Image (cartoon, rainbow, N blue to C red):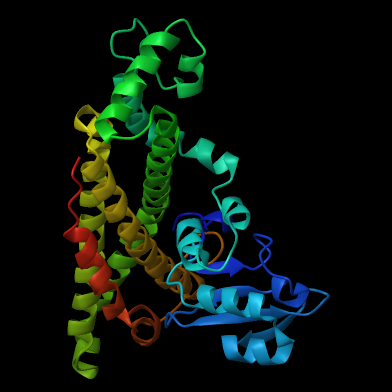
Amino acid sequence: MSKKLQVVDIFFELPLNKWAIFDSKTLAKSKIVLLHDLKPVVDMFNAEGVGIGIRTASEVITEVGLNTHDRQRLVALMGARSFDVYSVRAALNDFITDAELEQIKIPAKEQERLQSYMNNYSRGLLSVILQGTDVKVTSRSSLSGILEGANRGAALKNLMDIASRLKIEPTEIVVYISKLSEIILAISYYQRIYDALLEDLRELLVDIKKLKDQDALNNRFPGMREETAEALSIGRDTILTLNGYFDQFHKVEKFFDEITPEKFRTMREAVEIHYRAIGMIVCFWQIKMSEWRKRFWDDRGRGRDSTWKQKYNFFKDTVYHNLYTIHDNLELIKNAKLDL
């Protein structure tokens, strides 16, 4: 098995002190967790950081006596299907100030880790801006560096051309580029997390395939073959669907070649819908794989002793439980069309 998930990469847990958005110090010491059945609970801790058990949103509101501000935000977060940064931003958008929303973002160190994913995308934009200049786009090129150099005049002319095609004021082009960059960063982030989970997902599917092939157990438990086959199908569909989506998104490199206001708006609206679906899909498999790993693998990546019957019972209670909930999100991403 691969290494355990880093805290920043876990989509199914949200420490409530990750961002300063709650007044209640008691609540801020806690975290929201999506359990294997995909139900959200609040894992509560006392002042000394000792766990005192899990609570529903209504129980927390009653026990802690939250003000309206904290109550609205807690309920909004409990309704999220993933706790990645972009899903959290979407869930809280109507309940926090612009300044608070600004702090909910990927850390600078994480953005550096994403650079390899973003190079192709940013290169497409920079290539258009640098048309007619003698500057070569490299992996270290940046818009700010270009606008400070000798080719500033030509670059600004190209930026104004983009603004003209978008039918906006030249002064607004920076806002548009910023919005596009946020989209690119989000999808790049999802792709990095997805790539990191692939090894564990494939190993989980191998275990399920071995379980499916236990003929004696299949005879004892009617329905087991169909259940394991369904899990295998959805797991493979996840890999094919997300691989296809990310491959399609790489075409954003050519996005500015033929940009129009309608094309920009359509792309942004589409990808904002995709945020939640991809986040939910990744979160879903993180939960299932985490449960499986904790039960059948030790910290050194060695398999724990267990019978196939134990594996089947655990599979049915955790991995197979609520498996159908991922279907609609997979279909949304499978049918996604990006006008790039």
